[in-house]
Length: 84
Image (cartoon, rainbow, N blue to C red; front, top):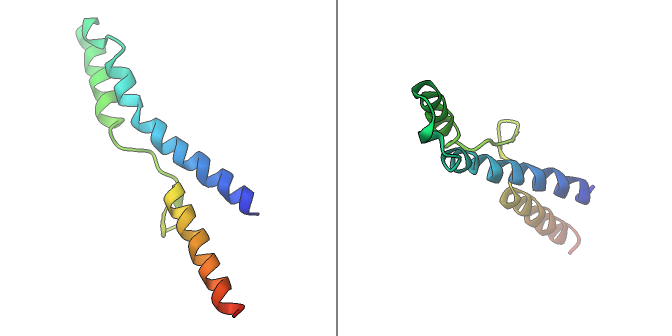
């Protein structure tokens, strides 16, 4: 179960990181040499891609490796308190 959670959180973190690279990739493709309507569309893509895509854990928080580590730390602390 721990490995399954790690895989979910790992890929959610990768989605977030790669979504931030979309605007940089579009900017570096040479869109400024294109016709005016293509420039406007690419500028719109760049503006919309500046916000990271995130997978949510219901109404609580987003799925990142930091939140996964927080869950693991809290679980470990709870188990150590219960078994002492």
